[in-house]
Length: 175
Image (cartoon, rainbow, N blue to C red; front, top):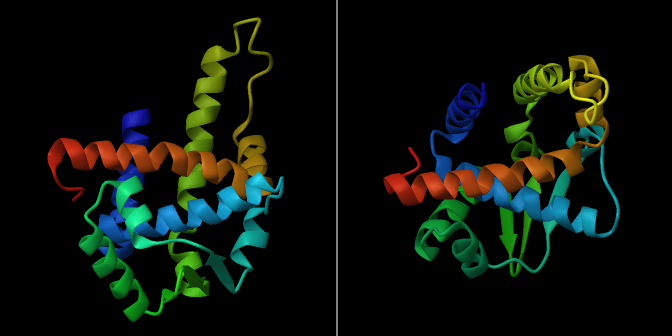
């Protein structure tokens, strides 16, 4: 089940830009924004996040992105420039601002459905164990994800970014 989920998610991620390097850079930037919220004990629901017109990540530099993603600095620079040219983000000094177009690039409606189904199935499998408690229903899971979106998706990105980095290291290419 997890393998099917990962394959479907990766295929959808690729279709966004036809370039997983751009996608992972955008994931990294959004993850940093959410991490900043989380460190202030703040979160946004899915609707609140996608209602934002811009998202600004302060004090970010290409060397840090390159180092954390294990992607050459020149590749990061090229991808950021391409995203800027496409009107998805704007780099100004040491900050990057994503516009509505960039924020909406990865709205995970289908992924939330897939993840909710996956968690419901695993919940049903674990239901018989006394330590687990009651099984969870797909609607409950979906509503929880949407309500605590930036917290849940921050954790999801903290899982997916290393997955993509390992994939790149193993196969020498994300695509």
